[in-house]
Image (tube, rainbow, N blue to C red; front, side, top):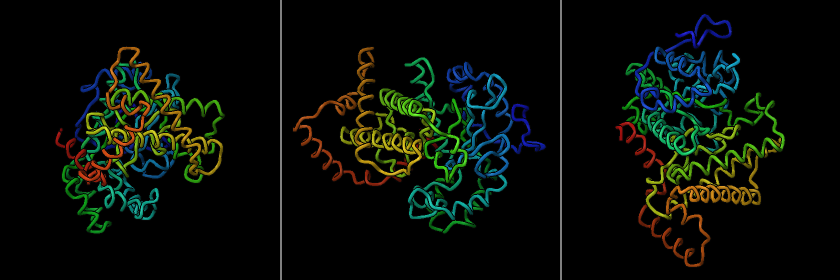
Length: 419
């Protein structure tokens, strides 16, 4: 292993794996790497080291693991803080996030047993069964199609953002996608077969055929998320206290980033991703004002109708508003709970901020998508009648919008095939 990832906590060395490289940002998106290097010049040494081999966390436990850190809600990812320019490991240099290495870690069988014993966000099955039965993805691993789909989404949006704003967004920047060997995948499948019911295996069998992989990305900070602030889940959250000015700053940054993403023709959420979350939900919104997990990001071109566009934008605003409310509640150290009055107020704030970004773009001569403009204009009675009629027609003709698995499967399969 390269000296870039030195031994930590008295260990003789870091476990590592050699995998097939499917995507290398320095070759495919060099402009993004050049931009990272302006603030984190050590990124090039990190990339060179990762081409040699992939470092692995000592185990799948939550908390500090040698040089790695796993937050309590990060079930398929672990991060490594890049050294700052002053030599210390903190948020200044950003972090490299390894997503999907868990099946390669020595205690993964015990980790899978744990996943089969704990609940997950109100799902009717334990976490280890929720993913294969409800979402049709394998537990504790990344399908190679997921890795590629997220890489494509994030690389495209960051490229657009850099071109328009002259800097990178506070979002992931893909560095690598690696594919596990057939032997590693087979070992993982054998373990699943020994633990999961036949129906769970049947639902993920075809997806596993393409293989599993690892996505590696850069994030310009330590990716602690709003959901990680629950003290009962994360002891480190006790040190995360925010004064009112800091809270206002974080929510303002979310509003700006959300609006900039939408004005770059990318929707944070669409109804067919129900159950998969969104980059701006509490499980993915970072407490430094950024977002993570762009797998379910939806380009406007994939949204076929005005009615579906309106539903997507309404849901996206609702989700990010819920995140903001949960963040405020965590900062005030009060239990998370719905608040309809606050929800309506925060939704108005995010919509207002989006309108301001739309106006700024148009004043700068930047075209705005017609569906977005139509969605944001003040309605009259005829608009209300039209929307209700159209919504009824869409539901009647398109029952596939009622479920998420078909559209999500298609996304992964297209990415796997290079589509």
